[in-house]
Length: 350
Image (cartoon, rainbow, N blue to C red; front, side, top):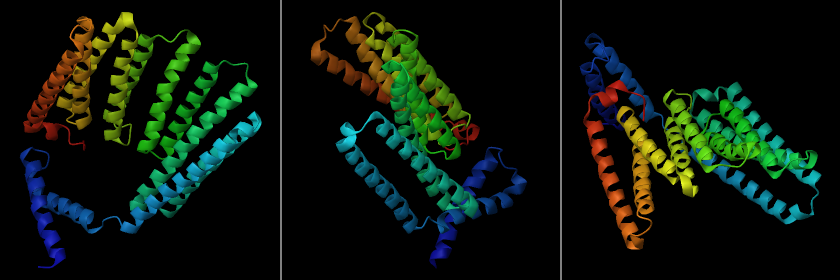
């Protein structure tokens, strides 16, 4: 049997299994089983028969490594000469770097569009490189705006930081719209997270409770957008949104008088993401729920006992909570996977 025939045999078996499951659940009409079988088999065959060339992966890796070396060299040069530069020269250098990065990203984007690479595997490589350039440009743009604000405005440090954070957020968002990538999404998240405390500082003092609740709401909004398909990278969006929600819930713990707010918020977030896991069986929700329970229970117990348990008692509570949370997560995952509606109701890749 030839290699091609072997590939076809494996695909036929998989196609039949998939189509049978779809027919049994009423997602495909039984009368169109043959058409569905041919379609699934064609997709599987094309996926295995046309893997991404190895040289393309090496080219992408070389691009990342080359860019990293250039950035590292520029960083070393700037670090050694930064102290001797005037403020105008610093702004000029950062502005030039921003222009170069954005121009390079646009050039890659336009070249890929003109050559039609968005329709094949090379488009994904080009998009990732473009997104990286745009995100790097957002960082240098934020630094440029922050330095320029300090020079031209009679501003406080918080105003400069707020303008820089907003610049990072906006430029990263525009870059993400042009070339959606995980790096771009992280740039938006960092910009949003940094914007909150500096905006609060402009209004008044930074209150941990207000800061935390705003970050928590940002995380909740992030997850809503993830489930609505607004973010192209759904799994990464779930991780980022869950992380923002957990961090936001934890921030009020820095206020000694309002720690109970953090405990309630953490418990609520843990319960919410575990409930989400039942509806959308994705691992970030399960992991976030386990982390939330593991953090909130020892914190609350040690606080309510006023530290009387000591170090050994604290470790025992933390270990027992982690074990219980892990067992709860495993049990919940087993129940969700055994539910035939889990994949039928939500066929979107998790």
